[in-house]
Length: 284
Image (tube, rainbow, N blue to C red):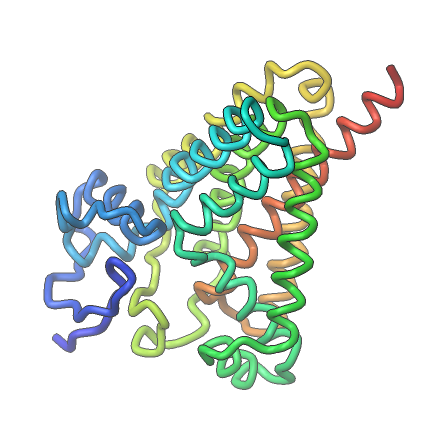
């Protein structure tokens, strides 16, 4: 069996173990997801089988519980002792540190590839290039600016609930790319050395549970709960149109596509909540 590479603790390391995901346990896959999607040193406690990394998307929202909770806590408690705007900026910085800007890197590569490529091969080559281009820089500036303004415009309590809801929910939606289309490259060409497996029905139920459970506190928040269908519907529409664009161009997904879809779908959640909150205040 030929060894491939995988990113662990921010470094590329060779796979030297059995990659048969049928022999991995759910908790090993969950642990691998926390290691894969964050920079926290979970690897010091336990090293899951390499086969578990093919199933990390099934527990992507679980990593969102961690990053979402960290951001929410920073905004909510930080606003007690500092200006709300500074608390929002620190919350964004906290997630960037927790994830190593993994998804933001995907967003930049996505816009560089789709903005500068005129064929499937060219788009994939640009996305794999480690250098960032004009489209990627502009995408990050606009994304971070809109994200900051959206969270800053919400009261700290609502911003915290929105983050804790949107992070896992958006990762649940973005994870559907794995089911909806094949991988656009060969496994040997994968930037992380991993091609995610298709999600089984039991794993899909688990994925939905992880993505939807954190939304319960937002359901109880006055002013938003009456319009929660838009908080669900609008991000799904955004996800669908991104899916159409990716399918039309690549006929498959990449890790960068998943990361970009997560951030853009998540941003649509915040914008939807901002609009609902603004209209609610205007009507009162």
